[in-house]
Length: 240
Image (cartoon, rainbow, N blue to C red):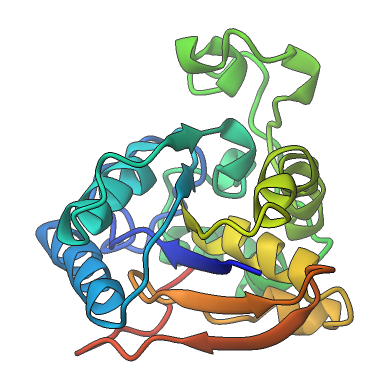
């Protein structure tokens, strides 16, 4: 089968501040730009080529993908952006720093929200101006599908629909696929690719910014091999 490579976007401005970002459309830092370019150079040097690329509809993944494909001289390939690849929605935690939330709710509760597989944070108010239903980019989406807060388990269920409808059919055509995504939507993809992985292991799966995760699959899309590319000065997962 073709190669599947998943890359978390470069560091965002809120990543650098330890803020819960979720569906907020925050751009990258200069460090994040360099992380994305470095990922593209590493993929090119390792000989990877792609037929199709997927991202969320948030600029930190879209811009990261542009930069990766630019470094690979592949900006001409078809790309698909879809809301089901968005980051986990952090509900009422959105925009707050981790320290602020710990001070309010306690470290144990915040740890459960961050790393519990089925733990859903307090929901965002449905009349909040930041609610997805109020954003023009989601106007074609059934409002009943748009979350006000998600657990990782919820995120997996959301991503699973797009995986089966859009990504899996392309892989079965023996095409090479790049997915530029977020920390928790990448964990969701890992869960779909490796269903035997325990919930706790999925929730704590480390997803560094800008480090390509490479899957080699057989004709049934079972995993033959999974490894991360070696990136100079790769960072560990910063947060949330």
